[in-house]
Length: 109
Ligand code: FES
Image (cartoon, rainbow, N blue to C red):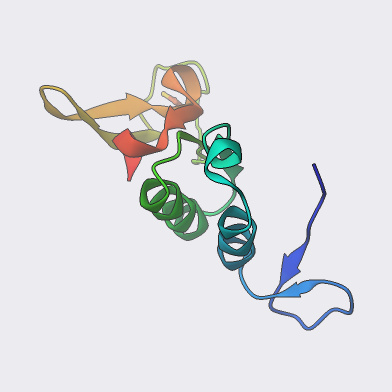
């Protein structure tokens, strides 16, 4: 496994573009057997997480995202960190501090 960097800041030796663009190049280089072993884990700002989740969905890959929310209590009491997720019975609210911060990408985005 290699470590790859992506940036839109024109750094030498770095892939020029978003990390999801680089990930797509990488995923396209894999064989079907290799692709079947890929799982995606992501942390960062919400727009990037959404782009990563969409990429994972496009390639039918399991994907987990680590959400960041402002937290007042951090122990599940204030509901200041809730996010909407999709469950089998419809939309629900989950507290990032105690129910996460790691969520399956398919229920968040
Ligand atoms: S920070 Fe208070 S419930 Fe999560």
